[in-house]
Amino acid sequence: MSIKQAIEGRVGQLAEAANSGDSEKVSQFYTENALLMPPGSPQVEGRAAIRDVWQGMFDAGVKDIKFTCHEASEAGGTVIEVSSLSASAPTEDGSRTTLVGKYIVIWKKGDDGNWYVHRDIWNFDA
Image 1 (cartoon, rainbow, N blue to C red):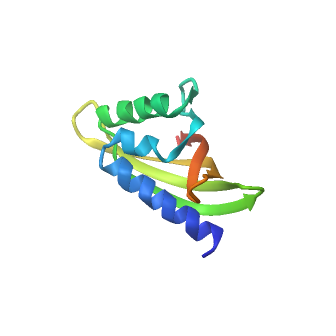
Image 2: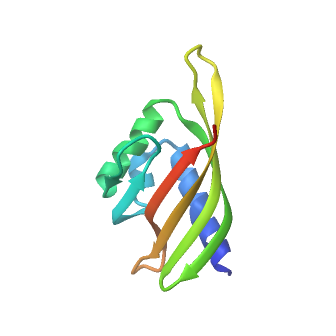
């Protein structure tokens, strides 16, 4: 299995957890001291804070989350993933809009052999 296939597998599992609306499950894909850098907001550190950010997105009605891995490069126990994302979110008039963006994630391999998100930054296209 290539490193890109391994990361695509984890990305798929992460999207499945996110689409279930389970912020605790999503947070378990992150390292204990992970940094999440959402657009227009201060960065947060650690699984509990990351869980809260994801819960806030779920509470705001974000769903239909999809990640598409374009590139995954391994170097010294880390992988840099360059990818795109889409999701839907409610609008003020009650309809839904599609959000499209891109992200970079740095993955670290855990002692259990799984890859975990260590740094996560994204933004949305205009």
